[in-house]
Image 1: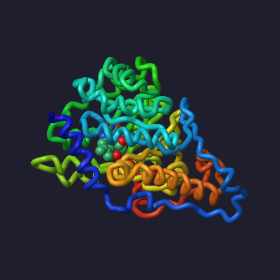
Image 2 (image 1 turned 60 degrees about the vertical axis):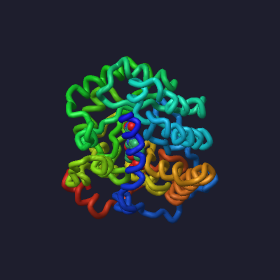
Image 3 (image 1 turned 180 degrees about the vertical axis):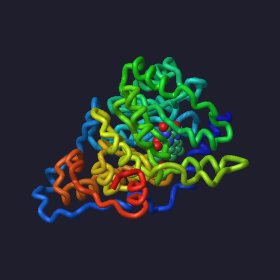
Image 4 (image 1 turned 120 degrees about the vertical axis):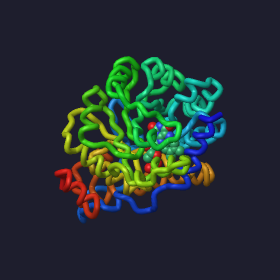
Length: 342
Ligand code: FNR
């Protein structure tokens, strides 16, 4: 099965090609607070992502499904989500809409986590009817629609027609009956794109920037005629958050995904205006290489690191980080200046 093979290649190459350890989150640092007037024990991780109330700002972002071998990965991710109270998205469900034999690789997520917050996932080429079926398939609480133009262009079998996306996003949002989240997959989003998505009535946007899983690299591994010059395409996740901030959009909440490695990166994302942070590649590495206990311990460590940062900065809950000043240096500062942001 071609599609199942592609799904497993994505996993294999995402594990093999993750960007080097340093990324744009390293360009950000906090101004310390010597008198935070708070105790660690009183910090809370509960986070509003309206209409969702999350018990942690970390969410397990869309990765897989559509192949028998993906079932076990999704099962483990769903257990981590359940045990640690994290919202979780499944990978693109187009495979299951076309081939009922692979529905199980997605359905396992709802079965393992019957009461958790679970998001469905499709690309912007989906029809309203497909969106409804994807949501029903896993009794999803929300639907992610991914935007991945560069990935498709570099994918040997990828889409080549990107017309009508905004209209379909609007139609799906109006019809689907659950909140819609529009997300990039690691190339970041500009002010203009963010404004366009918001204009379609979408109130949760995952800016999905560069810095972690790099789908240009992943697809180049799979392509007989790769285009390596596109491997640094896009905006980093912090740059994308700065773009979103410049839009000053009322009522739009942001998720920051792309290169989040630990709780301090999460704190920086929240300080730059995100309401939640998504993790994909780092969790894929954990569930494929480590025991379930080690995965659960890693999430505990991220939570602890975030609470250390919150305590040191005097933030009682993640939302309080939003007023904390961040120093921006290096390439991120230089590029932000070019975009009229300092
Ligand atoms: C992804 N991602 C993804 N996103 C999406 O919306 N639908 C999908 O089907 C997939 N598939 C997928 C497969 C694999 C193997 C990976 C690692 C990732 C993208 C993912 O949700 C996220 O946006 C990016 O991976 C960036 O986050 P990280 O990996 O840097 O934490």
